[in-house]
Amino acid sequence: MCSPSMTKRGPLLFPILSLMGASAVFGAEFLVTPLGEVTPTAINAGGLIVGNSASGAFLHDGTNRTQLTVNATYFGSPAGGPPPQRYVLATAAAMNASGQVAGSVLPVPAIPSTQTAVLTDGKGGGLLFSQGRTTDAVNLQGQAAGGEGAAFLFNGTQVTLAGGEFPKLRGLNDAGLAVGSVAPGFGFDQAATFDLATGAATLIDLATVLENLYGPRPAYQSTATAVNNAGQIVGTIRYAGGAPIPQPNPSFLVSGGTASNLGTLGGLNASAYAINNNGIVVGDSTLADGSQHAFIYRNGQITDLNGLIATSGWVLTSARAINDRGQIAGVGTLNGINSGFLLTPIDSGAVQPPSIATQPAGGTFELGASITLTASVTGTPPFGFEWQKDGKPLTGPFTNSLVLTSLKGTDSGIYRLVVTNSAGKATSSEATIQVLDPLLATALYTVVQVRGEVGGKYQIEYKNQAEAAAWLPLSTVMLTQNPQLVLDVESVTNRYRIYRATRLP
Image (cartoon, rainbow, N blue to C red; front, side, top):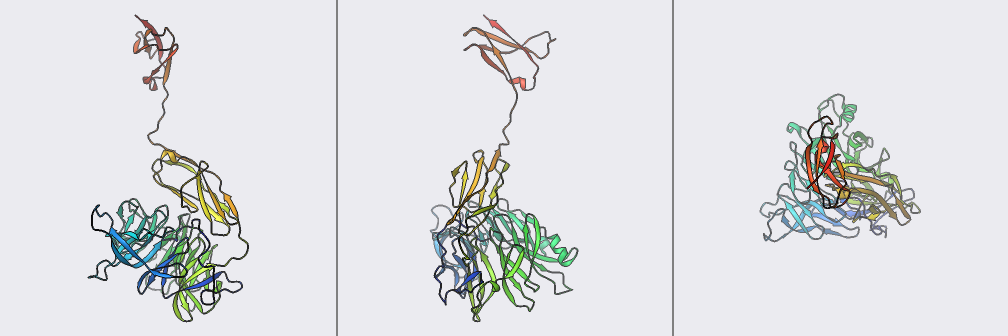
């Protein structure tokens, strides 16, 4: 999944640096902190890292590493059923800003190779899912997705099986868009998106990228690995057509419905693993000599991360996760020994106040629809985000995106985003949301004004045509006021009636 969006937080978790803990040189963009012999998989908005090690899944707070455990029950267990049991997480694949972790446990001691999907609640508890062996993604709302073959999506209250043939789920954004792959005809994997509510799979169009790489109708396999809150998707492409080989195997980015090749660091292969809400991508790529280095992709350019740090014996081989602060977690070697790493951006000077680069857009939407309001922000992180409706703050936590699901009439209004940091604040332009009720309808009726004596009884009659001989009864009324209005409910289909009132005894 994409690294969770940043909410308002305190200072960075790694302000104190030592020769053993971090390093920097003039011109470098990142400080490097070693994490030990681990493989990070995700870093959340607060800089907390999860990943995998020889002893199971771990949580790293920048100083200490702890083993991840959970007291969990199976989702859907009846009230009064078996109490939660304590498990050690075997793997951790993703973590949101609230500290919820998606991964797997080994719940059956007699069958130690059997994994079961788990989603922790960030407070020591969690849920197990019988539908899959691992949970691979979790978003800010606590919705989750994961698995291969028997892949599943969890919307917080119910589980839906992913559609398509042999689906694999890898990423999930805050709007509930899941990404991964399917294998049409049980052939090669093809990158796809999945609907959280229905599980329906839709292939991602990579035709232009593929034809530029391999020519018309190539044989290939692809998978989408991450998606951010703007709907930008990253993933990998692998040639599967046999000779002639070798062929390039790049990573891709889909933005605004258009797919592009991210390129490589000079070699043939590249893999994109994560994209943050600023559209910055990280992964790994081979060089011309065949060695592998970690990369960062931003502003349309792929760059070797090893050129953005002090050497200090480091070789960064793969970047696996990035948050909205620009912190990056991955793996490499330090003086020839395998080690996970954390890259923290170096403060290049004065803190720049926030600025809204792209404004949120409103619109008219159907009742029950789901929408996302998004603004892109520049300046110096960390940022605090507050969304307002009709001038009043909404209840957070928030990112630069606001997800509105199952729209109601009361969701209509004027929305805006207020962004703050230590240097100031910025307010977006207003985005007006109008929710249409499909049952709402209007009609034009005729109202007859009757003047007479209060307490008097009157017969109201009509003719549809002036030349008609007979007057037809409409209603009988007793005046409670003078004048009094009488509604003709049939006039919506008979607009040219003539009326008269007659006093009754």
